[in-house]
Structures are given as C-alpha cells and as structure tokens.
Length: 283
Picture 1 (cartoon, rainbow, N blue to C red):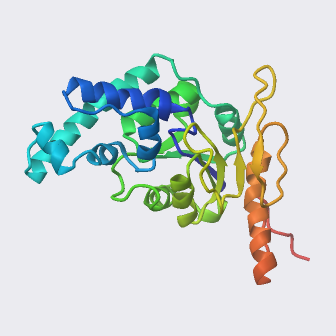
Picture 2 (cartoon, one colour):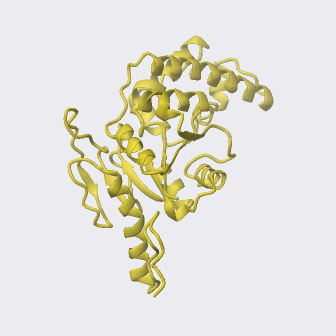
Picture 3 (cartoon, rainbow, N blue to C red):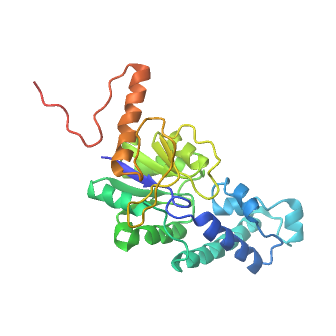
C-alpha cells in the first residue's frame, strides 16, 4: 500500500510567516512579555521544532528576570504551556479567517492519491488543533476526514528527529519504502529520511536557501494546471523524474521506484515491484 504523508506548516499553506509569527507576537503582547520577533528573528526560530520549544528559546536568565517569571522549572514550564495554548487559539483564528490560502497542488495531489487508494496522513510537530485547522483549510472538510493526523506531543523528540514519521508509519502499518513525505524544510526532510521515507520538498517562505541534499525531488511548489496555472520550478531532480509544469501523483510514485532502482544500481540488488503492482505470473 502506497502512502502520501504531508508536513503541515509551509507545505499545506505558507503559515509560518502569515500565521505563526503574528500569533506568537500577539501572544507576547497579551502576556506582557518584553519581546517581539521580527521576520528575520523568526527565520531563525523556525529551525527549532515545536511552538513551545521556540518559546523556550527566550528563557535566558535575563529574560526570566525582566519578565518577572518564576524560576522554578515546573512553574516556568506551566507558564510556557499557557502562552502556547493562547498562541494556538490566536493562530487557529487566523486560519479560520481564510486569510492564508492553501499552497498550490496540495489538494489536487491528495485527491488523486485518495482516488488511487493511497493512504493519506499529516505528520507535524505543531499542536494538533493547529494542524487540523490548516488541513481543513487546504483540503476541505470531506477530504480532510480521509487523513490520519499525527501531531504535537505524540512523540518526545521533534524534527529533525525521525520520531513523528516513524510513529506515523508504525501506527498506519505501512512499509516505509512505499511512503512519500512532502516537506518544506531541511529539518523535516531529515526527519523523513531518518524514518526511511522518500522525501519531496516544496520550498516555502523561510526555507528556499536550505540544503536539501538527500531529497528525491526539490521544487518551488507542487503547482496547478489552469485555471490556477501555478507552474512549479524544479530545483533538484536527482532521480531523473522530470516533472512537467506541475507535479503529478505519477511523479511522486516514480520517486519510490526510481529510488529503488538507484539503490539497486549501487548494490546489485534486484529492484522491487512498483507499489501496488501485482507479482509476476508463474511460468
């Protein structure tokens, strides 16, 4: 059984710059915290997996003193959890407003994958409420209901650790060799590769200059045919899939078989059948 697993932020919608950043800053203001993150600041913060973890980067001794925060670790953790709950409320309000459009191609590809019998999932280290709001925005209620959602603190380590992808694959009973992950960041790509998945990258607002060595395909977006007519630009195609003006499900399926062939070329091992193909008939 083949599967398509999307990351959420930056993949389903460009939510980091237009959703998470303003939600963090409104939260800081509401709690009277002496910090506002600029776009440049946040370009560094997105390299930290998880919203609470990004907030915890603030907690230097000087900041804790300036903000009048407790020094007891348990009390400080609870304070950060309060900030993060409020930040999630603000963020989901931004998503529900419809202010941030879905990224090109994500729904089209998911519809094709569902029609072809692929398993659909989202694997993200963002809060589950945030992930579900973006998923419904990008896919619509009916298609979103076809997705398994793995998010938030279901695993102890955030990306680039492979835990969220390994957990997702294990819970769904999938063969990692039959799974394509769609990511937008180096940390996400490393997580997918660490779990043994093929990874296609669609670069987003803060990730265009990152190193995506190891990805099976790197594009500016999945693209869409007319009337949307959003054309993708291929940045790296190491397996020679050669997508057209927009990425198709057949291109993603080819990443699985092309990657298998590349391994066989270097090891002398036979290639496996394409996902979903029948075994050869006996002679």
